[in-house]
Length: 111
Image 1 (cartoon, helix red, strand yellow):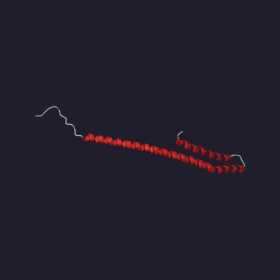
Image 2: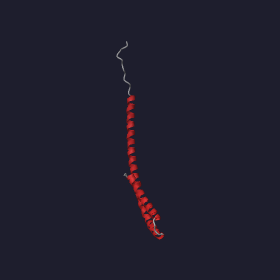
Image 3: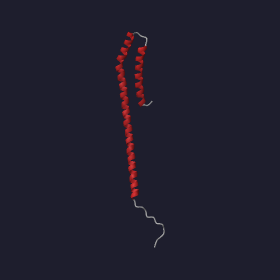
Image 4: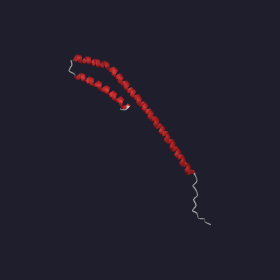
């Protein structure tokens, strides 16, 4: 799995696990008091979960920024090389067109 996909997968996994836990608690056959106690524990853990998810997203964004920067630099280098090659080809073509045409004789003389 590429780095780009792994961050999204991990974030989705964490978020899905949290949502599944809440859904499981809501439909579980427990008393209201027990369910509230479990939900309170889950709510207390939520800031840590959000912080972990935020850190993961931030790291993934940094990786994507670095990748985009490297790709931009490669593209810019290739563009500069293409421009230089085009300029050189144009210069050579201009030089060829600027040279006088050779005189062609047909081998007969007219006196």
